Amino acid sequence: MPALPTSLKGAATSRRILEAAAEEFAARGIAGARVDRIIAAAQTNKAQLYSYFGSKDGLFDAVVADRADRLLSTIGFDATDLAGFAVAVYDENLHRPDLIRLTAWLRLERRPGGYLTDNPEHEPKFTAIARAQAAGHIRDGDPNELFALVLAMACAWSPASGFYAATLDDPATDHDRRRALLRESVERALAP
Image (tube, rainbow, N blue to C red):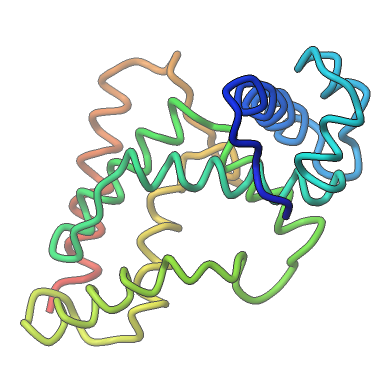
């Protein structure tokens, strides 16, 4: 992916493009998204979009990376409190359902099997989980698989759910009940 612009005006334009593209890709996927709708919503032109992101695929990759960075910067990660991490992911999915929709499109259109991304930033999480295991805080098992289990549990009521997708419009008591169930389930699943 090309480097993002450093000027304030360029940064503002690339941010508008990312925001418009996130909405377009989350709603329609990679194949269904249209660059014309993105540039209209971002109030820019194709030349700027392509100079910043190279291609529609490059733009999609940048959107996914941007949304994942936002999630990771919002949610702290403590390997000794993976239940708290799961609850935070549940809450982020309520407030920002676009990331889970983007990852669903990524899985459907690009990576039907294997790891969703080749993100080296996950490695410190796996190392932290291994340290928590060595200290007796978490059950034995492959740290990658334990992390995948926690994420799957956290996304049980997300827009990617095959059963029920929670929204902010659900009663607060429903969210509280789900958070408590999620916390207890993760704690039990990972207990040493």
